[in-house]
Image (tube, rainbow, N blue to C red; front, side):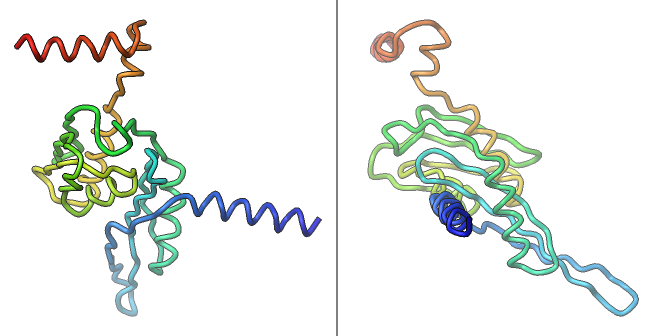
Length: 184
């Protein structure tokens, strides 16, 4: 019985170890009480497996490690899958918006690297993107930037999903795209 429990615990640790987590932002908040100030912490964490799955979470607690742990657990519950072209970049350019935060994500040729600001960079590194160019406009609030990036990534579609939705073959979709570009 004890052996089964330890094996289960080891499997859970292996499952957790497949994810990399990045701490994006910590906010210290103060509550004024009769004896002075009572401090708390809010953490924003991005979690990903570097193979196309990524999520973000927000956690609040009186201590930083506890806030980070809560945020990491929340991030693992909200994972999304992002289709990657050749496992390194986006299939097409996309815009995302959350509140006053606006982001533009552009596909990039091999060797470009991740050209993006702080919170967006954490998302791209967690998802496993190697080549992408991103620009944020509007709000520089890390929460809005991360959420706008996720809204954009949710719009990302692969040729395979487009082909299945239209009832065609992937080669038909890709062939049509190249002929349209040539005819322009």
